[in-house]
Amino acid sequence: MPAERGEPLFQKLKRPNIRYLLLAILIGVLAGYGAVLFKFVLKFMQWVFYQDTNDFMTFAKTIPVWVKIVMPAAGGLVVGLVVTNFAAEAKGHGVPEVMQAIALRGGRIRKRVAAAKIFASAVTIGSGGSVGREGPMVQIGASIGSSIGQMFKTPSVHMKTMVGCGAAAGIAATFNAPIAGVLFALEIIIGDFGVMQFSPVVLSSVTATAISRYYFGDFPHFDIPEYSIVTLWEYLFYPVLGVVSGLVGLSFTKILYWFEDGFDAIAIPEWIKPAIGGALLGVVFAVFPQVFGVGYGAMNVALVNQMEFQLLFVLIFVKILASSITLGSGGSGGIFAPSLFLGCMTGGAFGFVVHFLFPAHTAMPGAYALVAMGGVVAGTTYAPITAILIIFEMTSDYSIILPLMLTCITATVMNSTIERASIYTTKLLRRGIDIEAGRERHLLDHIVVKEVMTHEFVTIPASAPLSQIIWTFKTENAPYLHVVDGEGRLTGIISFRDIRAVLNEEGLLELIIAHDLATRDLVTVTTDDTLQEALDKITDRGVSQVPVLTSGREQRLAGTLTESAINGAYNSAIVKAELAGGR
Image (cartoon, rainbow, N blue to C red; front, side):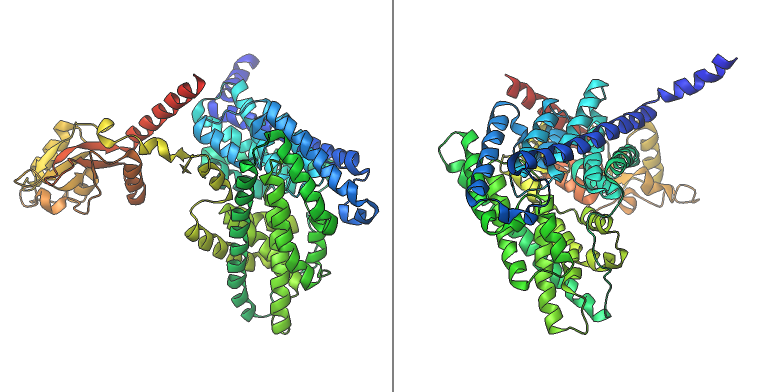
């Protein structure tokens, strides 16, 4: 009897949804310890280069100028050798590589990437690289999630959830921000807020956060004074701050990739370029030590209103330069922390101006610095929900949530209107990969509708009575009836939902005709349209299939195209592309 009682529970644990939840916990544990290891390795690398693990601003004056130039160059040389000879994916800020793996390789990431990224990013940041820790941890966590998924033979449809679990765990453990980690994975990495994705990602994020808090404690990332809205008139300034933050974010994206193009154009071996970038970076932070590494020390000074306006303003441009040199030359690190830094300095400078002009109606500059941190993050990543929540969790200050929402949404809407691609997807576009909603668009741009459409469709005359419509649905087993006029031209579509309202009405079987019931505001495609054009129309109208018309002057009904057929064609094209790449 006891064995019989235990068997149902064992069988339940073998269910796929329970299995994925258990894998999510495992990924959270491994990614959490990966984040702990990364922080220790990062501290160790800074000690190797400078024999001090404190914030660089506290001991910058004791370091000779030549050391400030040589050490970043040496770090860049090491990173260049690792990236060139071990794992090219470790180069750059990491998140685009994860997005590309999900969209094009079914979430499969090489197992060596996690180790390479930990080492390369720790060397870059430890030697002075002006980048952040979150991009590396996203890639490290995603690599762990992918490895676990491959180890347990997770189907491709669920592999991206495993990768998202790792990414969420990486963000959560790095910033002590479990909610923001979940939203980052769903909003940027997976692109899906469904329950099947949400539950494992939450479990993984919570697990990694618990491990991080065990080793480093539970406290806000930034220790700031309590800010509040002084008057309701102050709300007028935050949309303006959103515009300013958005412009800074756009500038950062443009200048970053301008530097990347510049270094790519230099005809020297790739492994030398990070060393050159490191030497140039050393010159920068020899003058402005605030931009060394992640830069949290300078940000804390600005947030407590202890930095002058002139320095705040100058550091905006210096940080863009420093981060662009680091990443453009081939260093390894994230753009999240530089975006926070830029927002902090931008908001601080903006706050100085408005507080000088309206001292009785505005908070201190630190409040604007705090809000603009989220604004620049939202303006670069196009992920306002993540930006709002990560600032809230990093500060534990609810009083700034409304200004933060105003600023982040303004920056995101403005920047996404000016530039379709975020700082992440721009990198993929530069590789010829146009990803939208998890797809590589150019694959669908090379397939035309007539190659995929079905020629099986059911038509009915526009004059057909309701009785004939019902009979046709019963006999043909068709989801839609295509209504045509006397000359055979498509005039509308009838679904079973269209006739449901009149089924029980007596005396209407011969009075109502197909023309009365049909949906005439149709979205159609032609046989020569591309699948991407068809998918855009299907997505815009929220339908699952569209009629296909012949191209030319006399457009006649030629078939139908379903969203599932597009998905099948896309998956087939991905397989062919991978096989071609393998050969």
